Amino acid sequence: MRPVPPRATAARAAALPRAPLGLRGPTLKTTLNLLAIGAALACCLPLQARAARQVTLTVLSVADDARYAKRRLELAYPGHPQGRAVQGVELAVQDSALELQEAGVALSVRDMVLPSAADLPRALQELQAARVGHIVADLPEEALRALVRSAPALLGDVMVFNTGLSDDRLRAEGCAGHLLHTAPSQHMEADALAQFLATRQWRKLLVLQGTQPGDAPLAAAWARALPRHGLEAVQTRPFKLGGEAHERDLANVRKLTGEPGYDVVLVLDSDGEFARGVPYATQWPRPVAGAAGLVAQAWHPQWQQYGGAQLNRRFRKLAQRPMQGQDWSAWIAGKAVAAVLAEGPKDTVAQQLRKLRSGAVFLDGFKGQRLSFRPWDGQLRQPVLLSHGDAVAGMAPMGAWLRASEALDTLGLDAAQSPCKN
Image (cartoon, rainbow, N blue to C red; front, side, top):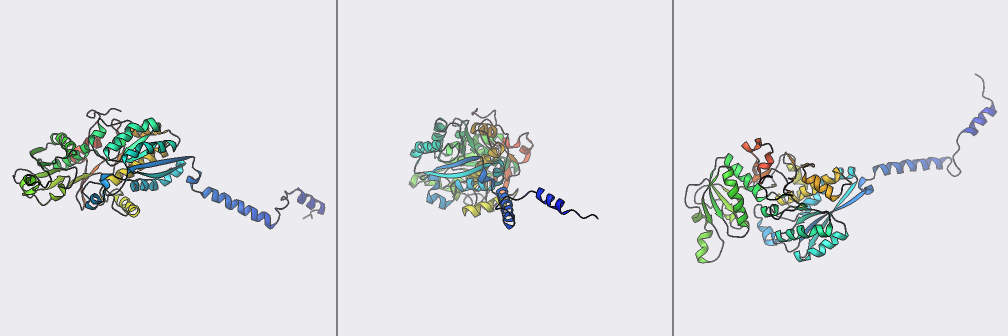
């Protein structure tokens, strides 16, 4: 083997790239290591920190909301809220963190509690300054109507979610193109219970109806549901809670249920105080449904199927209380915002709203079916749970109604029946 001449070796050495001054030997190695570590850290930084779009989801409520009065929360009436909506929304944003990061969107929740509904104009001005276009309205009915009327003029393109009110009037003459409902309507709840009763062949109902303003819409929903499902109200009796001697019989459950000939006692009580005392107080041994006994709800803390147990655990850990129907409705509203943001990170609010209302975006509500919003009234299609205090007895649609072309539209008003056209 021929030795390499010294000059050739020197020439090759001179031809090799030389490190700049100050980056030779151990210093160069250290710098290269630091660069490698920096590149790795940059790759591993949360995408939220580098998100291209910042979005605020505002939960709007009022401090003097009668639904959250301390006494009502302590009584925990079936089907009534047991806490405010913000915790459900916060959990939804946590659950959607990965898909939001992948889409390059940073979604934050702002809990905006107003002293009263009179402060709504000032709140809208603040939201206008912050360019907020997504609102979860945890409001009583009149305040929600005021928000829906005034929000577009001040905020421009906006979407408002009703997560706590089931009143059908909000989905009829009170409907709006920017208003979406994640709480099931009274028509949906009545249809769900009616399907259960018809499936069990409990067709003759004794109806106990309250005299409060909120009881009339319940009666209207059931007047439609009964003939649709082959049920009959064999008796309808008013009840009234009062201290007057001549009104005591109107609150006496045994007297109100004394005549035989019915299969079920249906209680229409928007307040909940009378209804809670009806089960096991009837003259004849009959099941109770409606505002007590078997209740139609969006969610139940004992729902175990389709990942429901895990969702209940996560909510309890966050909120330190069980997840109720209103909490689920707030959670799915947050999931809807996250889903439409992930679907089109650069879409405007108007484009997002069109996608949601057209049914182009589907949601997983842990109820076993894909959920979407109805184009005609903005109502979320969803199964409704039928439950009592300890367990879930069933889920509607059920029985023959599952064979419909769109089974979820057997609950509530379909496009032809709805007076809302948006």
